[in-house]
Amino acid sequence: MEPRPALAPVRNDWSVDELVEIYETPLLDLIDHAARVHRLYHDPRDIQRASLFSIKTGGCPEDCAYCPQSAHHAEVRLTRDRIMEPATVVAAAAEAKAAGASRFCMGAAWREVRDGAEFDAVLEMVRGVTAIGMESCVTLGMLRPDQARRLAEAGLTAYNHNLDTSPEFYTRIVGTRTYQDRLATLGVVRAAGIKLCCGGIIGMGESNRDRAALIQMLAAQSPHPESVPINALVAVPGTPLAARPPVEALELVRMVATARIAMPQSQVRLSAGRRNLTPEAQVLCFLVGANSIFSGEKLLTTPNAEEDGDVALLRAVGAYP
Ligand code: SAM
Ligand code: DTB
Ligand code: SF4
Image (cartoon, rainbow, N blue to C red; front, side, top):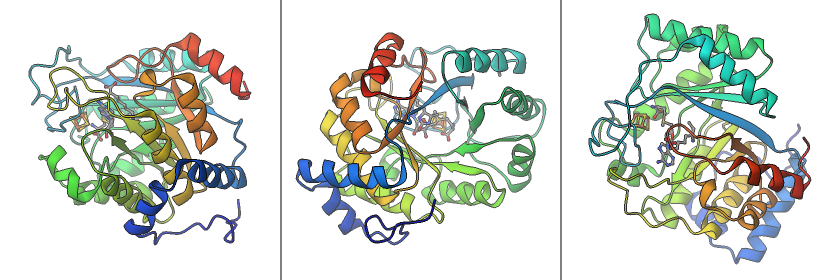
């Protein structure tokens, strides 16, 4: 769609100050602003359901403080698994499709992709998911250009790689890789012609300014990431962030709204943490710009929002089946 500059400019040069101001706008004004931007580029009733699947769980060498799959958080109760069989994964995708999902996202607890049987299995999964007519997304950690090219050839729609938070706050959350490493992988994905799915997490103890700075970094990507997942921290027992209080629903609404205003054409995904939201809070998120949710029983390792509640919610807002 053509950019519509007067009302909702598509810009890569948002400043952190501008975005803090947007984030902190009186809520009724922010909701109105974001809802108007949202409607310029999207049909608000068009809400995509995506399904998440952990193809390789646990034992990750990275130390991300929020993540139950890090091998550094030994107290987390999680069974490590080997990589799944491609046929099992494609069967799960077909089941998700039958339940209404049009995108299938596969996550591996890896620091980076390594060539060999496991990566070959991932390529087979991508081919299988594509063959049944679903969008495919994988998140596998860091990636080299030749690996990105092979994923593109297999038909991959998008690669998920989050910036998670602001460059400043990032060092308090992850010690085993840098923000620069993350940005480099985003460049590799783009260069292979694969769409970017890139977002972050709120509720880790960051400030409003950190949230604005995350959005500034995301919106500085040109073109903007096609897909922007906004996660509320799922505080998992045994992780260093286990004791974080739950994110206030209206803060999540502000974050979704700010992402929508800064990246008007992107698909904004209301991702982890939806289980703790009331239907009313989720409706507000849809109103201000969220146009995708994860459906199904589980996220990667933690429970998702209840399926029955989701069906009722989507029906209530008039989402297309
Ligand atoms: N290992 C790969 C990586 O980190 O890029 C892919 C899998 S990792 C689980 C994918 C994303 O899930 C992370 O970047 C993070 O944003 C999100 N995530 C992980 N644990 C989370 C949690 N407890 N709450 C919210 N989001 C989480
Ligand atoms: C993203 O931004 N959120 C999803 C997906 N990308 C891979 C992951 C959420 C994980 C939540 C914690 C868990 O279930 O392990
Ligand atoms: Fe590993 Fe990804 Fe979890 Fe970090 S977020 S510990 S890289 S699985």
